Length: 64
Image (tube, rainbow, N blue to C red):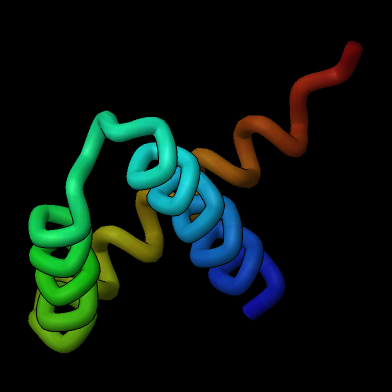
């Protein structure tokens, strides 16, 4: 749950920055949000979650 919340927060901040910078307008931003919302209710949601979790685990295991 913590990873999902962090990703949502990060993507939300990126979306706000893109909208404020003029890179993306409000209309396409709403479409992107709705796409993500409806994608979460499909069968692909579990695969996407596993993929993102494996990326997070890989990044977490990197030793500096």
